[in-house]
Length: 266
Image (cartoon, rainbow, N blue to C red; front, side):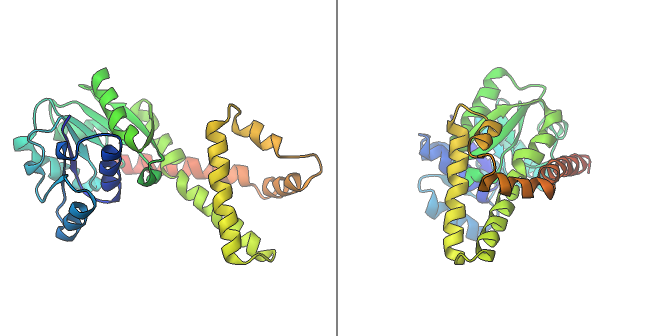
């Protein structure tokens, strides 16, 4: 399977690196990137992958074309690629907020899959949701899962739920980072050296996330299992609930979801 990536930013590079790590031959991969310094960096980091400045130069033999450009550049990039874009090529878009309808207008007749990944894809631990367009078959959806699965977990949802996905997992890493920041500051406030607090918090976030994924228990059960009646964790959780942490997170997810809808209509 030949894969062409349009846009060689950090997420695009992560996808290519993930594909290589999962067994794709580098000579079956290509990337179009307009910035010459970025092209040079991609050539250095991804030996064997074809790097070019023009989208039309990399899509001619592509089975999958991944759109990893800014949302406002999607139409222009597909217009440049159109003369050499194969009729059968799957267009897989990770451009935030760009609807399937818009993608299908820009790539008429081609199967389209819209995806919402997140930044942990940069370390192979991403979470992505996909929605298929009018011409996308089960085989196309499986192909999209295979490609995005190289850098994390993939789930299928209807397109109208992708805004909620954005609010939960697309924006979610920032919520976790903010929590980590606050925990580090709490450690410093209570006397820990900043480096010590950071090391403890980083490993706590990693360990808790791994436990959540690998355990058969859900988040509520795991939380309860470390909360002894009248203990230190119960005191800490009481403070969080008193200050409205749960409600704040609910509002954050809803606000991000609403903003994603607004951007999609823009």
